[in-house]
Image (tube, rainbow, N blue to C red):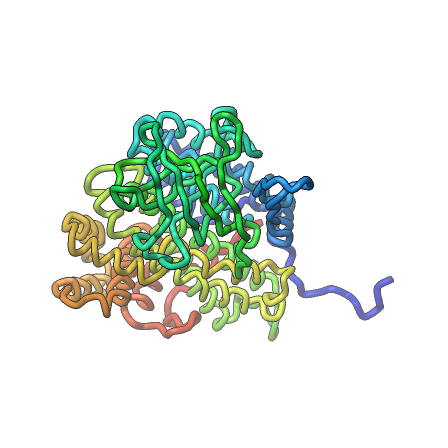
Length: 544
């Protein structure tokens, strides 16, 4: 029996039973903007269905269960046979199955597929980010496999099938497959050219035997993996099937699973190859070039994943403050808290708007849009993923002590928030990649300047930021030491340009004032108070 003093008051209701997609006004607007009108009805219906699922109490519980019960490695069966299998909580399989069924690996097969899939990925990340890894790599394997038309014809229909067919069996017997990848090694890390895994040609043309290790192999339960190894002609990309066509297990020795800060529902492994059968993808010695299509796609997913985490953190903070009372009124109505919430909301909308613009460039596919992606993807990956952690931490603080308690869900977001900045090349790798694009691919800078120039004359702070950026770009000698500063400005100017063109004036004004005009502090909640902050917060508020 509850004590007489235990009366629960002034606590917000759970943020559950709502449509995560339609409650995100910035995301809905981006989808409408970038999709052809004839696709709107079908796309909106599908995304709303996914949003309702994501916002349901049932799926939220699955996310909590999958995170609380991380995968377990079983190296041997009861008889001592090596099996190298990973067991997952049933909730993990339910989440992954819904993600596959929603088309999160099928962007390449339908009109407007990248925008639709990007919006869905951003939504589904908010259920549990861990299952995003196999969804991302399966989606991203397609452009790499297209380096070999025969391999692409064989595997692409399986990769893009909207069927989650779990269990280790020959791929040709499955309705759908998942892919992982293995690039980094202990001694090399991000320097994949330092890899020592060796590939020895076999008698059958295009087939090899691999010997070596991978320090990080993501999603080791997958049906196939793209792997880099040293062939006689140099670093080469290979397809490693988990199960061979005759039903025997390929040699794929899982040494251990990583004990990670966050992303705990997803398995990341150290693996050994010892006579492992592989099929070459692309030409010998061109492994990095072959796999870069996959890397670019997964880098965009890092942007989308971070945007999704930010959106969920902001939604939780705004929802809490809309119901919680302190010092004589609702927190959301207090000028200082409103400033914090508005600042967080602006950061979230800037991330979403940029991520969906890049997805639209994939759908367009023109030379100009491909050139824009070459520069904008690493710049966005650098900046948006770095903004995720401070947003998640500040949002948790909006809940006070409640935000530090696991049941609130905010600690899971905080632990997850640094991940996308590390995966697929940490910050310095992205910054150096931007410098390479600036030095070697002039069309990339032309496409970028054309894009930001579309907003010229609309905001004086943006115009000034573009002029300053052009000054920095005029001298790229010895630019490595200031590469982070340059890439940050590239990302901010691009975000500012998009918000000025597409966001409500209150959002664009706040962004340009604080991020481009210098009228803001280092912490969130330092926007100029004269701005229309109430409108910014109301736009970010999820309606349940």
